[in-house]
Length: 181
Figure (cartoon, helix red, strand yellow):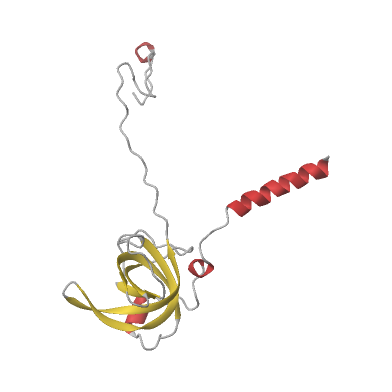
């Protein structure tokens, strides 16, 4: 009897752990060596040409070209798992060239994206009317992070006679009221 119970328990444990497996691509989860930053690459783009990077950020715009998709991102530091941090700190912008069609409605402005690829070059461009040099990454792996589920903050429903979960009908009769009253 015991070996059967142990086998069933192990099978249940394995199935639970398998359900917790990450669907994030390995190249997004693991940073390449050396882990180059956007500042280093923008300072000397020719030196780092062809080096592998894992960068992420917030999508500014997605533009489909004839043979690729150009995604402009605001660079954000990444967590150990590769997700962009929610912070106002940024080193600038970069461009990811993806050799596939990405729907601009799905890959919309404001979404979090992590890319893995090789530094292609530094490309002159503009942000508004200001000249800006973009580091260009030829992406081989792209991961669009799921949008966080918003918390629902609804007011307490008003019903006549409804006092709420913390109402104490015997408060008046306490010899010493509780300190939170």
